[in-house]
Length: 499
Image (cartoon, rainbow, N blue to C red):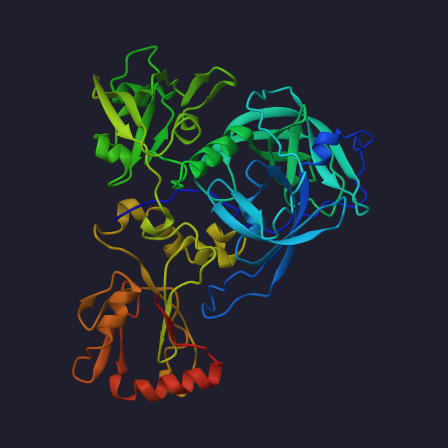
């Protein structure tokens, strides 16, 4: 199935570090007794997988945060706090009591996770925080942090903007609160509850110390996450599977046969087999209305609480997987009515997966050649500027997978790099090549590669690529011996991981 994941990211960025000398006269505020009984320290030891050495993990890192106690004997934190965790621990600030915790549910797109203490009655008399869903621009909120002496402090600041924006992953756009305030460094700064009138208004996920801007996952997104989870089977946040552009350009409006004064957004891409595609939407259509709300030329609609805001909010915040969403469109100047079923697309359904977390990458090593499946996580090994630094052919395939990857291709298999040995002399410079066929068999996944390598042709394995050198040959008779040499020389625990 062909998919696209047009997300723009910072997946699983490390803990932000605030300058210790950043002070504000307004930082320390009295905290209500009720709020004082609503937070716990969270410590997580995380160990990311190494996609350049897919059989190994990177060095472990420790992250700390302040979790919000919520109903059901649970603690709410950001997903990035516990990504690739090996151990999570909760601590009550007032007593020092500790308990291991298990992750009940995590959504890396919405950057939310639910923890539960292993020790019975650990949360005891801690009062769960209620959500407040009515925050608007201009409201004063407080970011909670803990001093090293366990004193709870509160930093006040206004909500300056409410918009639809990106979280930790590219492309998945959600409702977002932006604050402006000066935070001091505290031990629990990776995740921090944001409080309005004693209730939970959101969870801090990003802080920029240069301009003192704070990005907050708002309570409406948290409420959606919890309602979906408490429904019995977590579905995830839905999407429509389309990309759009504004229609302010007069020439575009003329081309699309839009009457003067008409709003709407121009459909630039429809994801094959996605909700919009199944509803009959086509590239070149203009979406005028979604779920009963007219859309203007910039892609905004009038939201009762926030005013003008991106129509994506109608899908990700206002809708759940399975909901029917009526659309009014213009196609070549003719008005039509369609209906899309909002669905969540699992990461594993994409040709190039948008994120691979809490599980190792698949790989196959043969004669020192490392084969992997292309993923956004692999590309992010080039760092925060991966879109420019990673091999551009692979970035292009990841970004435009829905339109350029052939129908039916499940994965893009690449020759990632070569572990030099005496048997693969001449191959050691090969890397980042897209595999098309092995022994005449089309390769759509590592499973296909594994199967093709069981059937050499005339004593050799012929490996074909999209790029130069187009093809190479491996002597099948000596592969077993060569593979033993690779294992011994590079201390590999295994030559492949497919399950």
